[in-house]
Length: 599
View 1: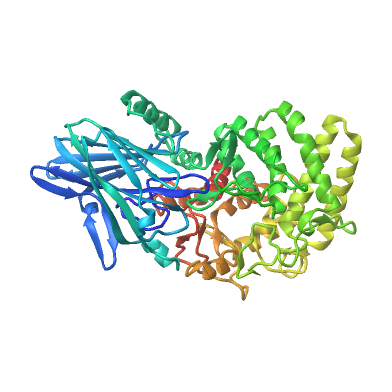
View 2 (view 1 turned 120 degrees about the vertical axis):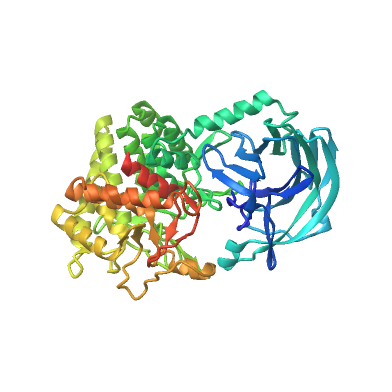
């Protein structure tokens, strides 16, 4: 992850991030081309008060797919640089091709630090290294990096480069200055129109470079990210980046560069990432993975990247799994796998939730609604906290939680009937009937003509859309039209839906400033594009197909895929115009929900 210009603007920008927990290893390759007696610096770095070198001034073209490619113009000559990760290994492949004979110097910059931290020059953090033809082996504190290349020679010159500055981190109120270490220079003798290769791998030595194996890795990348024929193919390529497999565990990265895999994000994203792209088996393996980690009637909210115990502080992650399973079956998923592996644990989880489980999650016997959360917990997707203070308190009976609860009960009732489990059918069917009755009596806000966000909270938020967009709606069509009118008046924008009405005194129209300021605005007016999904399904449910809705989505995707993180959709946007993007530069459910609606 980086920039077209080559300058690193975030601590996460590097050529290789890997490991558990994730570390930054190879930050950059500083490349210098020697041609016709002149030296041309291709890299770009920001130091205090200056940008040097300025390799971006030689950049003629950049292409994103199927892997990032730069074309530099040096007088009459051209140099192509391509970068790609090698699938199935913690390794990056970089290759160069010059139109003329030339010499290329590459200076690797190394960090070896946790991805959220920054590095300062320290003799104890220098790498031990040894070189032999085609192989530079670096090791430090039990970690090994292997750089295999076509370099003709390695010129040893270990040193620290000081005070690289990261402009985006600075704008986000974070530390923004870093020192990096280099072992020296790799020197390549480039032959005209012939590729030269470098592979950097963590821990396991990939061995001497084999051109045929490298070409197979490149062809595999081209098959995985085929040339897009239309806008939705571009979005499909965006979706592919979020699916991963590690030690047989299939799952979804919620967003790059700093999220891991989250249960909530995984199952909201599943239809777009998997089902819209005919990846049914991978979807079912992901469901299986999360069910195997269930505890206290819940699936994990977040699976950590350091191997520690998963976090279970969510109620909707588990309920979203029920919706995802239904969508998977509706899309042609395996009924045998569902019957053999999914039904029983899902039935048992729903029973546990109804009886009561951790974090105050329980069914209220008085009205059949689901109550979740304590005063100091945030169990819904609006979960921001600042210094231990909840920004959007939603403990109690939240509207989307009870819409999901009712739908899970109805789905389990139907599935039990199909299996002939009449006791289970009667149990959940009775709960569903009481829940819809309690919902109808309690959640309508006649003053605003829409639904309460939380019983006792009249805030106008997008969560009420789930009462219309899920398989089993909870309101009649006339009320649905009223809800849509309120949502469109207060929340709908060209880039998604606001999380709070601008008429509310708690509204924050800008997602900016340091971490505390941003977290305080996260769900207090900030716009989330993934909410286009429930909005579109609610519109189709109430009004039928609307061509102008499709045009809105097309305009959003067309305008945003070439902004920010190229080929991706951001996590959030400002509530007020101009709607600058913010949050995670590449977010799974932003791409997935729009792709699912489009398909």
